[in-house]
Length: 390
Image (cartoon, rainbow, N blue to C red; front, top):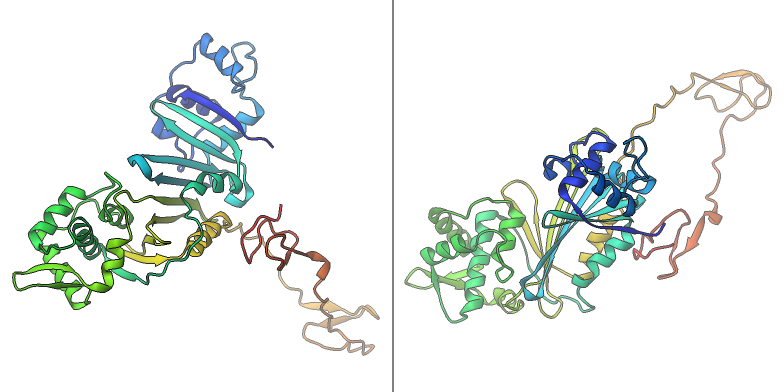
């Protein structure tokens, strides 16, 4: 089905249309829209012209079939993806996609807020998501830098704050007080020119480290041989960390991916990852592992794509089907006698009770158009290279 776009619908009007459809669930963006207002006759005419509603009869509002599916998804999404892309000109774009089930099943809705208005496109699937993400995915070329660490967030903040300071002045050393002041000024995603802003967002730490935490983190980093100090208690990064200093330009492009979905018990499952793009194939990945801990690693373009493809192909657990109790007895296929479970032969006629397993039907396999590997014909994506089989 062709994607249909709905442009610049006021927040209060969209809220009213969603209320026409029914109550909103706990993952719905509807509460963020505030109070709905009564829709005027003039606005009803505009909504009809925009294919939001059918021609009103007896003052009754009926959503068009397509927009009803949109409203149902916005009111009760099972998967909610938000990603933010930033890059040149210090501009950040944010897109939300909501799905009635799994990402792989499609039928998603793009919801973008522009001031007090919303722009909507539906239905969308993985192909459209890749189109939205494609501008930030780096071209070919492999990262040659090896770096990974599992840090307490304040320790990661001090390390990357120091890296930022060295990026600005490669010949200087910096004391604990200077690092503390820098973190105070840079905390939060307020710009795109410092590495430490991504530590703050990925680590979900609402406030910067205290001076005491900075001093403790410096000692941890000294012990780990990631920084070194001079006789005046001032610090810089060791030589093996310099590729991180040199790998990023003044503006650091990247993408933040956030997914929230429900499991079969209604529990929320969350995924949050930030990738920032440097020079010569350098990509840094930031991910919170447990509260207060963050894993940071230099990854390849392939690893970044693998993560995104895994997220696209992520399926929600289906409800358990009630399985019938296993039979206590079997029936002989030769003479019809009842035979106890576990018997290999019928006790009356001697026929074998062992069922032969059928070999795999190779006709159920097909070849990937991209890499040529054999895959199940029902798969929508190749499990070897991730290419679409459509």
